[in-house]
Image 1 (cartoon, rainbow, N blue to C red):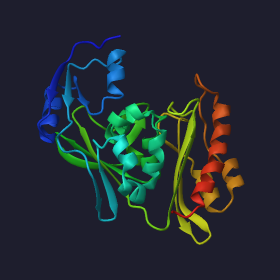
Image 2: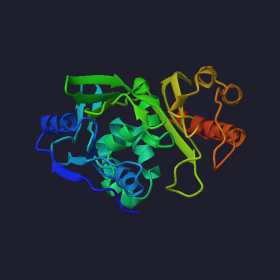
Image 3: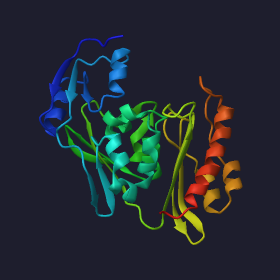
Length: 279
């Protein structure tokens, strides 16, 4: 299929992008990497009157500020995958990158676009929640910052308004106590995960503290398994698996029961990753 007709505008600045969105009263869409948008246009699931191209307005780069890693929304997946700074300071993001789609997609797709699209089976939303990250947004009323846990509201739904631009992502920089893990199960590498798990914790003596287990592919948003977190922090992987407080629905790919079983399999794998000191 081909998309419905639309106009195209190249934003000259962030303020210009916000102004163009506001001027079209919800009928405009932002074009970043386009890896999700173009597919929805071609299937006519989306039919904006205007595409506002925000490439080239400076929303990229990686910076370390006040103990936080700040990642520009237009950073391509491939750049993050190859970044020594990300591997050192945001290792969970580095772990996720090879799992995202295929190289052709990662060459164009952006971290901001992935978060804004908010696919519940995608890796990056779960990673950001696991790392207790923040998302910077600019709109007609100015700038604001939203916790990742509050950003994802429902299936493909976020706190972004029709006139907002996601500008950057911030997450605590890793240190010697940081432990992270990520695993997923998919029919083929590069497909969306049937079930996935992004996890973060702090080393505490011979155990773990501040455990955050965030599943993807099991609900409309990233899902924290809080009872399992407590059990894992107490030192028992078996108890953590038994305590998994998930209620995934059946879908075309697997039943809810199968997904919950797979969630336990992933928890055992990720627990081993969390137990390993950072290289």
